[in-house]
Each structure stands twice: as C-alpha cells, then as structure tokens.
Image: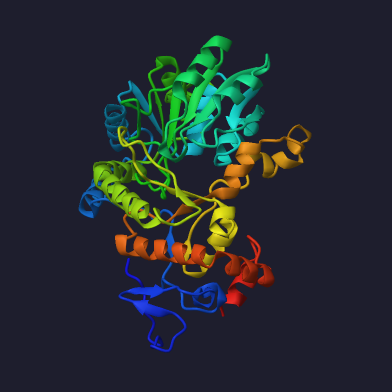
Length: 436
C-alpha cells in the first residue's frame, strides 16, 4: 500500500512531503484540521487474505463438478483433519461461524445457570449465553494481559455458577493453569473463546486443547478465513459427538433425529476457502510479524503510545497490532488519536469498547446497571488496534508511526482544537465537516 499523492499537491501545500510521506509538523497539517490525508485510500485493521487463488479456484471447480455443496462434504472433512493435526487435538468440528461454534460448545459442554465471562471481549462471547437463557457473570480482566483475572474469577464463584468462558485475547493465551485450577477446585466447566488464537501456543502447547473445548473463528477478517466460518476443537469424545449432532439438527441418519440441534454446518465452498487459507497461514503470519516489528521500531520513541508485546518464545499469529494510549503522557486521549487517524484514512478500531457490561441489552438490566469493573473500563478507554495484514506495507506502517509521533508532539494543541470542534467519538458528520 503506497502513500498516496494528489494531483493538486504543490510545494505551497500546508503539508510538506518527505519522500512518499506527507510530513506532519504542526497541528494544521493534520487532515482533521484541513491538511491533506496521509493516505488516499483507507487502511483497515483486517482486510481479507485469500491465499493461492489457483488452488482456491481448482477446489471450487472440483466441488461444483462433484455437486456436493454442504452436509459434511469432503472439503469440510479435510479441513477438520488438517486443523486437528496442526492444533494437536483429537477432534475438530467445523461450523458456520464462530458464534454458532460458541453456542454449540456451550450446549455440548452442558453449561447451565450462570457462567463467568470477561466483559472485555467481543459481545458474541456474552450473547451466546444470554441467547440460551444463561446468565453471563461479567468478570474484570488483568490490565497487563487484557485476559480474565484469575483472582476476579475466584471471587465470583458461587453455587449458581457452572462454568467459565476464557478468552485468548489478541492471540495471547489466557491464564490457562490458574483458570484450570479454579475450575477443578469448584467443579466448573471451562471452555475458551479462541477466536484470536489460531496457531498460537502457550508454554509450547498449541491453543486448541485447553479446557473442555475451544472455539475458533474463520470470519473474513481473521488471518485464516473460510469467508465465514468457525470450528470447535476438543479432546473430549462426548463433547465432539454432541457438537456434531447439534450442528446438523440432531440427525444421526436420514430419518433419525437423536437430539435437539440447529443448522450450524460449514459449506463446502467455505471449507475450500478455509483449506486454501490454512495452506498459506505461515506466509500470512510472516507478514503479520514483519508488520508488528515495523510498528515496534516506529513507536519505540513515541511517548504515551505503548505497543502490546508478544512472547517471542511462543508461536504467535501477530494478527492484531494493539496499542494503549496513555492520555496524560501523550497529551491526547485514545479517542483523539482515533479521530486523527481516521482523518488520515487510517481506520483504527477501539476493540472492545466500552465493555460488554456497558452495551445493550446488558446495561439496562438491573444485574449489570451498577457493575463496577475498573480494569475493564480503564483498558477499554486506552486500547486501539492499528492496521496490519497482507494489505498493509512497511512503508504504510512507517507513515502511520510518523503521524502518531507528530500527533503526540502536538498533543495539547490538537486536543484543544478537537475540543473546540466538539468532535466526539461518534460525531462522523462533524468529523467530515472539519476535514472539508
């Protein structure tokens, strides 16, 4: 992705150029205040990877010739086996998407009543519980890891709690041993939302075999995708059997229904994409790691912008580039930084703001209306995810880091001017007017 130039740029333009980068020296150079954007086209947190197109099209032609498009076809079976091999588990059950996978895993694991879950996660993690009539017990996170705080989990255990859903946020494994100890001591069922953690490891062991089951997402924005899809990984034979029944209406044969189920099947075309994507996964990871290292170099000297690190001794997919913005040191809040980047056509995202407990429908429920989760609130106010993936070049990352450094260098003035413009986090109309 190259840094864009515009036909009407001239030496007299407000924003000077240095090579291919529009230099931001003063507050007025920023696009939100009328300067030229750093990028002509938008950069996103996650644009879809495709893999080897010739292999994908070959598979498409094959499945069309075979006319087996769904119902546990050969590509679904091949994808399940390939994933089981890479994850080191006995069973992988491919499903239509990650949310359906969580839904089925919760049912297959027999969770009832109340289930402890982090509030700092994608809302689907909580929704699958409420959707089934279960009660999410929102738990605070460790501010250093952004994952469930074991101490907070322990404090929430009651006779009504039957399980825990841990989340390996950003691909960095949850406190697996501590959560396992809590679950075992209190007779709780532990499963994981591993949507971020495909091909990541913890203490040398691949994510996928922890707890009773782990659920992955192959949504289009994930580094390995099946257009839309997911999978349940488990070493538990009974959970795998129940999950396979549940994803296909409970059918055991053409005319035999054994249990309650839904339509959670992955299609053959999705599995074809999943296989093609998985075959290129190591290449995708290499690009992600290259980008992560470029951000690490570019942001090392920028005060108040802190890049979350990955353990080099572990396998990581480096799918997310996550920074925390210290408003006091940077002179700008996280939301100020996001607005500035959006004006430069860098679509940074506030994952996962403001925390599930402060989203509808939970915030209107008496149980959650006064819930205090200070670490979750603090992390949710600081985190920003930056563009990465195969659609983002190192040159583009250098430009983003330059914009961030210049923003911090002009932090107090930018914050004052944004306040004067009254550009709020969702005031897109005012944002566009300020750019024009």
